[in-house]
Image 1 (spheres, rainbow over the protein chains, first blue to last red):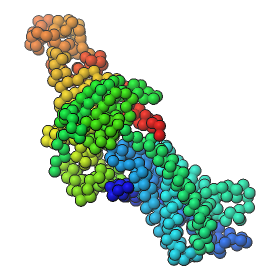
Image 2 (image 1 turned 90 degrees about the horizontal axis):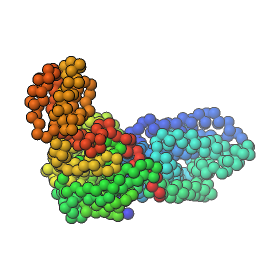
Image 3 (image 1 turned 90 degrees about the vertical axis):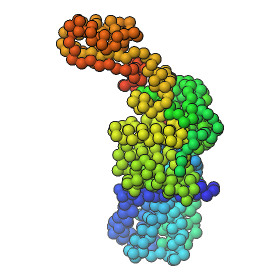
Image 4 (image 1 turned 60 degrees about the vertical axis):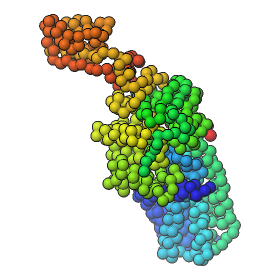
Length: 259
Length: 346
């Protein structure tokens, strides 16, 4: 990549981020809804910390990992919907007439999703500390937490980009919202996996990659630097990104067809 | 700053050359059926036809956005099938829908477009501002495009197509849906681009007036084939004499009106007319409107209305296809084009 390519990626990412900021109806839910759910869960499930083997006495600290994933899902839907809208409106044709390459378009789109993820992470981290959550990884853990949050935004953004390129329709993209949240609810978001008593639920949570993403973030709050949990989380991010970025690249060749 | 010299990258005198261009959609009709055409450098070429005639499909192929099924086309001296990147360097395009981001301002659109075209960073803002000024959007430059009128969107779309100084400009139905004032303003800009900048313009339209006013030459396309081509004047002169349309003051006189009018027509035939009106194309060597009036007076037919119509491009279309241009469309051609793009295998 040369300087022109970097500038192209930057401008596409900038547009993607600006677009998100200027749509309060999509921006605010991605910030407020996860925090609202965090507040409700913390208030309602605080007694859960009395279960023997529960890893912390603060449900807030335990649940704080979930907003990072919810935020990632919102970022996925927002960036995916924006890309699908570009296909619908013909904006992608405008881009196709420029020297912008497919990799630069993908990088820019995902860069926008990551920028949004960065804003969300800053809000969640700040709110967590303000509400009294503990952070066992200490100061050195903050950059790791941000890196993991960005990795989550990136990998989920790859899914959103792929789906957007496949369906090419903003409404269809939005209709996927419940699907992604099913993955969240059938994970270790509310309880550690080893405390889930229902066998089928635990099996699903074991198979659900979202569990490992949550546990990676959670480990920094509750344990400190847990190599296994962090490795699994970063590994899942890398796997999702590899699979869906490859798939998105192939889909883009169809969408951004030029002779 | 000038936008173009009108010269083409491949050194061609002809900016666009098309031979036997064919587009067959997988689940659709033959959208473009072996068309041949050429556009000289600096010329405005009007591609006139109803909806679904194949205009937009042709533009998508010539702008490298749709693969050709058959035939050959060069734009700016470069082959659209094998030298797409070089073709895109030569062209600017404002496609059928003014695809703009409603959340960005005009200036932000310019910033994005100039960056994507690799305009040096130091020049981007000046280039963008100059184009915004030129299309009369300076006062609205910081407003988000979502609040723009259709005419403003079209003007911005045109400005965006010019950021990299293309020598050939494709405009796909640029004034569809615009009010007369916006249409006129856009026409003036297109004329200026061709006359002052020497830019080659390939313009599709379904408006006769637009083709008549702007185009140096017109190609009339119907059902994927070019049915007539030439300067507007040449095409109209092929039709021959003007038509006369008369409406009797008393409907009971219509039969006599027909009888008199047909004496002046070619082959004694009538043209389509609404209501009680009778319309005929005058035969060569007629005595003009005066002769018709004299005969009608002698026959005692009083008229409510009498009009002389010079041949129009619609008459040319009617003559070549047997149908009027207005309402001759068959369907949403652009949708077929989109469907085809979706179907292109990765």
